[in-house]
Image 1 (cartoon, rainbow, N blue to C red):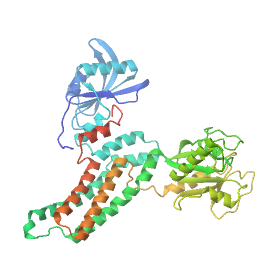
Image 2: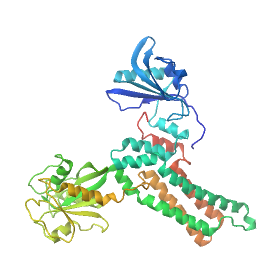
Image 3: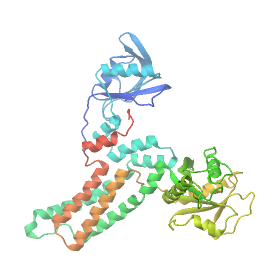
Image 4: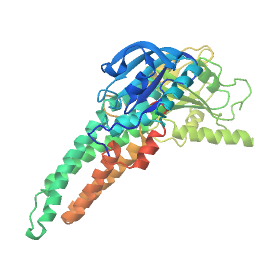
Amino acid sequence: MQTSSIHQQEPICALATAPGIGAIAVIRLSGEGAIELVSRHFRGKDLTQAGSHTVHFGTLRTQDTIIDEVLVTVFRTPRSFTKEDAVEISCHGSDYIIRQILKLLVRGGARIARPGEFTQRAFLNGQFDLVQAEAVADLIAADSEASHRTALTQLRGGFSKKLQALREELIHFASLVELELDFGEEDVEFAQRDDLRQLIHNLQMTIAPLIESFDYGNALKDGVPVAIIGSPNVGKSTLLNALLNEEKAIVTEIAGTTRDVIEDTLVLEGLKFRFIDTAGIRETVDIVESMGIERSRKAMEKADVVLLLFDSEFTYQEIALLARGLPEEKKVIWVQNKVDIHDPLHLNHETALISAHSQTGLETLKKAIISKVRHQVGTDTVVTNARHYEHLVKTSAALDEVLEGLDAGVTGDFLAQDIRLALYHLGEITGTIVSDDLLANIFSKFCIGK
């Protein structure tokens, strides 16, 4: 459970920068006595007298032996990331120096931090809620503009504010329903049922798009899957190599060269895409190739966007057969390859004309791919976390139960039970209601030093 009071715990320390030899490394220390601990071994300014958010040059020593020349940044409670007294030591990036400084701090009374423990302390001290804490890890892992923007929105509380507003409205009605239970014998109704029904409808209208955004949000983190589908030797592997600008897939004139799914990622206009080269789809008696074709079908089903690749040697019926079984809502781009040696076909579908071999038309194809998903990108909140998605679904189910109870005219105690369940699941997302096991599971996935 979050608390507004700031509790200074035993000092913890860890390397905050990536391990490995580099020019500079940053070692982080937080907790009760952190400033005093570093000050005992620092020759420069007296850190115990230093103000918060100040940086000081000097040397770190063990007895009379200099370990390194360092910059020490002091953060005083509550104006630090953890809201505890904290120190960051910027030293040279030698593994030996890092080990010596950490040994010095441990001998002085600190202990090595567990994964995510600094962020966990920030959460426990009320620096931010659980959604924002999890966004810290997402921000570190962001490798595209879209995933960075989504993580930053959550870190700054965009998602949390939406959930908090929902929760406050629901708490108001829950309190009125609970109050009715105290006057059960007097048959009074403090919570107007029509108003409660309208509130639940409004909440569902807010939650529904959040739930629906999860598939896209998950794709933002892992890359929007784009499957390249076509018959053997139509140029799927050549197209993959051309898009990635590297020889990722083997290209030969032998039909059926690609036997397994090959994939790699590419960032286009700030969006991360995961391009998947698949085995050519055809009738075959080759067992291994048949397994590859089955994987192609599965990749096509799971892909957010399908590039249906063909050339002028195919009939319209043969091309349409490739898309057999695809749902109507699937985002499909018809792509004619080898237009440098064949005339374009006239089809009933808008077609991207390319030559993967000579790399013509690729920019137009990229724009077509982006346009298929760009409409999903907006300023609205996007759910990217499976835990959040799970509890939003459970919240929605509990709210459905409230509506069913209202329609059936159930008593206030049953309504209150379903409302409390919805509040519980909303609270689980933000950490208003949280268990030690949940915290341990979430923060164990963080890197040490964060």
